[in-house]
Length: 367
Ligand code: NAD
Image (cartoon, rainbow, N blue to C red; front, top):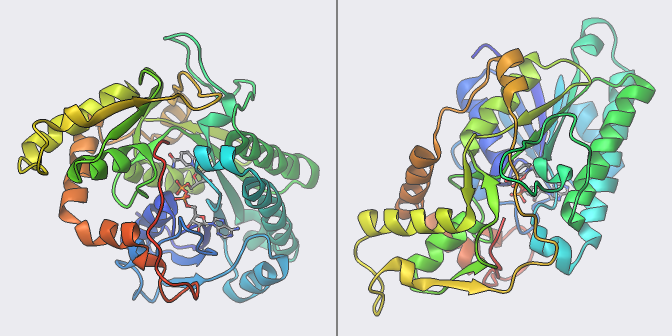
């Protein structure tokens, strides 16, 4: 990939952000600056493959801190921003929405303003080439009640949770900055991601790790909620493609064409573990016996499904992984990378950077 840029990635220590950073460093000639405040979801271990690259640098900065952001812009002089920093866990947004409003709305506002100040000072080709790519979710569209319709780029916004409402707000801000100031933005809305380095509070890693530990596997309601799953590396490739060739002001939906009921996902993982990790914990006859149905989440969306035909037609992107190939890779990755997830479970991944002692992480477990 011929891609010689200076890209400021926010949230690059998170699940998708770290996949984007790894991909930019390994597959392009880009210089990458990662701006991340390292919340519980930020894990520098996920960046060990790029940490020593001379094309990668890290800024421990909160996107709500405009002065610190202005300094990063002045020092790094980016040609583009890829904005992934966010609070991203729906359950946490229900328990405590304040941080979602702070980071997802006010943080996006402060990043937009720092980026616009910097862009306003550019001239000629540098100004023309600058892009602000806002990475968002299909959850802004609310949910689908039938089995056939799909979210398109023109589906009206109808977010259900504090998380999706805060992301919807940030999308509106980004669009308004384009309309009002002519600021060169791109927006992508993606379906549920899964894959390596996924924080264990999310459904797929939570199921894998609970099964390996012989713990109950909680499934909300009857497990009939449908999600459209995309392998995280396919998402990273799509994001780089949009940055490279997307049209200013446009929105692109990104999806995996992999609609699955939550219960199907859980059962698939259990079957793969039977094959790949046949040595089960004491007292467990079959991994699927650990499945436990729990009270549904309030406002739980029934179905998400993405129409990704625009990005395919206009930018030539399509996912490389099917759900079968991606979920097999994911389960294998967790089996082969126990050190990564043990350090998350013990809290050791946060040691030495937050001035805190290691405390075991607490997880609730869904997307
Ligand atoms: P994540 O929770 O794994 O990572 C978020 C990262 O942002 C962390 O590294 C965290 O430290 C950082 N961060 C949080 N607040 C910050 C702040 N104030 N300043 C600087 N850094 C901060 O999230 P993810 O799953 O990688 O998602 C990345 C983006 O993609 C989010 O915007 C999310 O809404 C969007 N998205 C996620 C999915 C998904 O399935 N995970 C799907 C579609 C879209």
